[in-house]
Image (cartoon, rainbow, N blue to C red; front, side, top):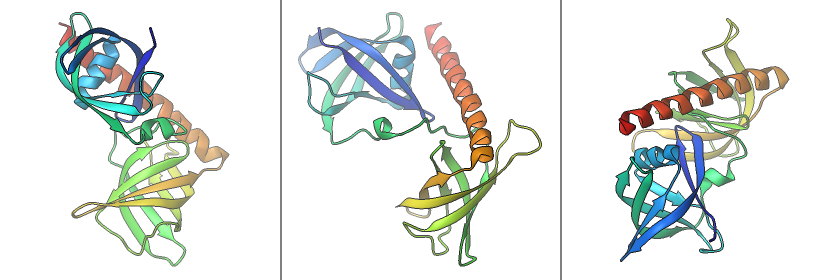
Length: 211
């Protein structure tokens, strides 16, 4: 039996585990999955399968039914994906538990402010209603504050805008960051603690469904 792997993100943290096929009926397939994977799939409302010897591309599927008493999920509407961005991430990218205001300073003294969307050791996302001349490729100085640390919560790092996603009335700036050793330590501490909190939260949700 070839191994199958599911991958879902919960608040930026990858939840991945091995699964096996229990039954196939018409166009639906029932899988035996890890308990944490089952709840991650439910909260995502979709299941994502990593490509393997069975299929040459990653797959996305809709959820037909959950059975938490035996950790199975029944899926249908399987579609191929061109790529799976979650697999391409170099490091875990967590969603913050705080409303942190981020300031982007460009070298022409223009400033754009927004809310911290996600954070990793190599990059971060900012959602803002402003675009004061920010463009892909722009070099910026980024500053914001994190919680859960000592009084020294200030983060100031260099960054580069690698993508801008435009919504109806806002922008999401995706940036690569270049922290020095001191800033890297602060960011790593926050991400490590935040990842623990997110997994604990997911386990708490699982307990609610297991009752």
